[in-house]
Amino acid sequence: MKIETVVVGDLDTNCYLLDIDGEVVIIDPGDDFEKIKKAIGNRKVVGLLITHFHFDHIGALEEVIGYYNVDTNKVKSNKFQYKIIETPGHTRDSITFYFEKDKIMFVGDFIFRNSIGRTDLGGSDPAMIKSLNDFLKYPDDIVLYPGHGPTTTLGYEKNNFKYYY
Image 1 (spheres, helix red, strand yellow):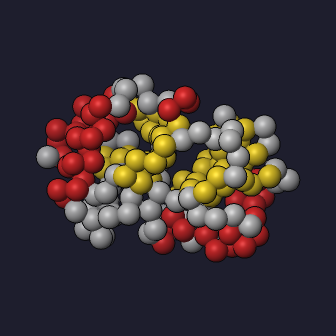
Image 2 (spheres, one colour):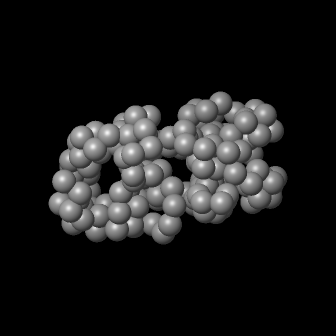
């Protein structure tokens, strides 16, 4: 799987384009629809995944749905195999998309490099702590793709979890 990052909007949100054989899944189309569309080019969009529904992650959502005729959190291709993990904390509706075969997770604003998502914008500290604890069971070599900033690994971030409790 090829992963492209298109940084969009005033808050520099990471919109991800996952490509397998010219089929594309869009994750978190935060803004700048024309920029996303240009990055996709003539490839076929087969899915749209949203980690949570804050404005900076869904700013171009309606345009993507209308232009590519896709539904939210659905993928019309068997090439993309993933699990949905509920990760409330930043928001009540936060989810992570885990591509186990590829050892990658798209975590939205749940975990960042050297940080975690704020809980004062519709989230919960106890829910965040539970979600972090739930992630201790996953392998350390999983690469995390956050909603903002650079990638990191779960193992690296697990070392920081103790600072958030």
